[in-house]
Length: 221
Image (cartoon, rainbow, N blue to C red; front, side, top):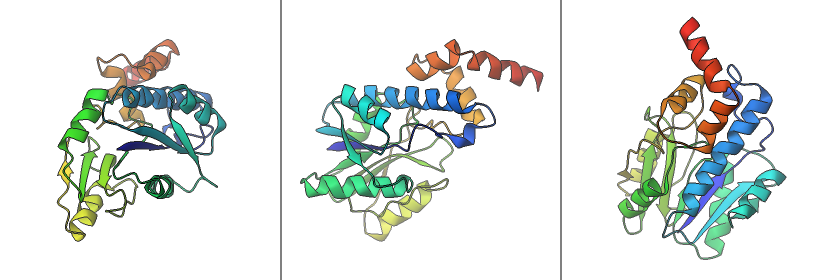
């Protein structure tokens, strides 16, 4: 099984956090979150490899530090396109199962990834971790990798369940607290800040003064 992470350019990342963070802060936070995810995947047994689907030179350099590969996109066409690119590339190499995860789930751990892998059934199969609001799809394993048509977006979880059932696959749903928190909004940031874990992302938010600023804004509201 391989893990893939679709990554847009770091510059301009996380536009939906614009109300709370300036461009440099969004850049730095996303870099920290992606690093947290890579640390967790690198510590996960039973993964044969990690690949980042990206055009960003700095992301490629970060991937190399973890021994991860990069699969280059011709252009940024979104998460669905990037995941499809990774699936096509890895299936051509004979990879039978792919775990897909975004780079904005900083509380994900190797233990959680191992739980997802352990829950995954023999092919044909799909295992999915919903976002905490049960709208997004924060981690998906498919065997074979192209067994279910994946379409990512704000409300992809239930459509993914239906897509699996349409091809006679009953999806395995694994709710997990770390993988369930993707950072898309200022409200998500506040949840991250309040968690007891000690990730690079939380350290950045604390040391940059962002955490204190958001807490002060919350008190003043």
